[in-house]
Image 1 (cartoon, rainbow, N blue to C red):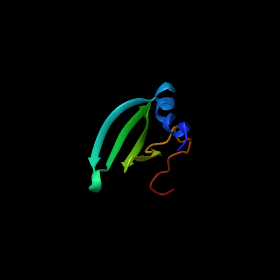
Image 2 (cartoon, helix red, strand yellow; image 1 turned 90 degrees about the horizontal axis):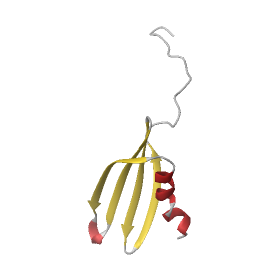
Image 3 (cartoon, rainbow, N blue to C red; image 1 turned 90 degrees about the vertical axis):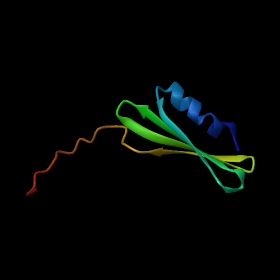
Image 4 (spheres, rainbow, N blue to C red; image 1 turned 120 degrees about the vertical axis):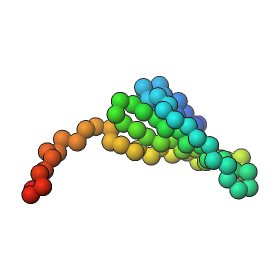
Length: 78
């Protein structure tokens, strides 16, 4: 695994994202799953780290969009 993926969380924090929540789940066979809730303005994302057998997998899941939608709201009849 390259160092680029390991620095992704640090890059997000340097970019202005802040930690809004954190949880750890213990898995079978000694694994751990870390969930870090990140907030920037009105945007939320989940940064996930899965640790199993000495290796890790990391990923970012956007929960809300980064930009407001410019779509005009429709009424009941269209």
